[in-house]
Image (cartoon, rainbow, N blue to C red; front, side):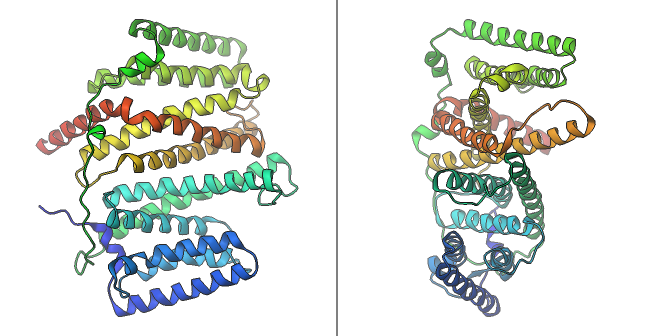
Amino acid sequence: MVQIDKLRKLLKNTPLNAFAGWTMVLFLALLGVGNFIYGRFMWTILIAFVTGIIITPAIRMRKLSVMPSWYFIFLAIVPIVGSSTAWYFFSTSIPFYVSVATIALLVAAEINWFTSVKMNYKFAILLVIVTTLAISGLWHLVEWLLDIYFGTNYLLYGLSPDAINDAVMHQFIYATIAGVAAGALFGWYFRSAENSDLVDVPTHFSVETEDYVTHRPPAPIRKLLGISTEKQIIAARMLQGGLVLLLLFGIFRKDLSTTVNATTGLILTFVPNIITRKYNIKQDTGVVLWLTLAIFLHTIGTFEFYDYIDNWDHVTHALSASVVAAAGYTLIRAIDIYVDEIYIPPRVLFIFILIFVLAMGVVWEIIEFLSDEITSTLGFDAILAQHGIGDTMLDLMFDLFGAVLAATWGTTYLSNISYKLAAKFDELGKLKKQM
């Protein structure tokens, strides 16, 4: 049975849709010129990028009549029109992030059509949600860096660091709401739209390279650490014992933050063992030690170190981000192996991992912010404390640093786990069909 590329439902090849699309493109181009004249160069660049995304199918397929459906163009440009002029249509930035999600969907579809990357509409929607969060984090990180090093006033405009941080956290929450809502809307559209009159798009063949399909086990981690498997297991158990001591100390001192973090961390350290027992996916001891160390350093940081060692928070963020990146790599790679409609080359997967980790960093900052707000309202000490906009932005920077480390060697050390996970997907799929 031939699989239908439902992403093609984004395109139309009708005179009416082409007229509406090119009219909006012309208006967007004039808006870009106006922003350039008035020195609003960031908006000029953004408008040029969006314009290019909209007209790419027509250019690549050499048919001016082929355009994205006009309502997707409308969703993409209306918030940009309002934000890049003096006309502010909306009271929150949620519509702007819906625009980001729509643009991300168009980009994902065009990558699928015009490159060797392959994805189905479900994966594209997941990528849209993650990208919306990542763009929010990256956008504010860039603004903060420009304020720090070039004296601009995008974020740092006279308010206190805590007040600015609260405003950024609200933006992150808006991005989350918009990303999830847009993902649900796009999912409904792909499921309900008719399959007739789909526009034909070029076919690109994907070729997996030998290094990408390797079953090489992650044994080099043991060689990298320079210690035996037995010693790594002992080290992991010692760290777990340290978490138990921190838990007991937190209970004795009635320290809610240490108690909650030690309990949560201790539970997480047993996840690899649970996966091994339940799904027979054996974890390398180096990976287990790496996860346990990240959890232990974070937990002990909530006890005292975050307050007295300046860079402790950033070290733990980098290490934790590398764990998240490894998990993201393993999962995405397993989906790539298991689903025939999806193919992600190594270099593209590297970018996907960075987007995934940055999005998870945004989610973590939201959790910290909401935790602070709830515990403050209830009169307790903060469980996950934030310390102003500088701390938040540095956290995101170190998240990216940890992601780069994990994504760089992920193909070598984690592919074996991905293949085992994909095999388990296949086994569960066959079992489901038999039921």
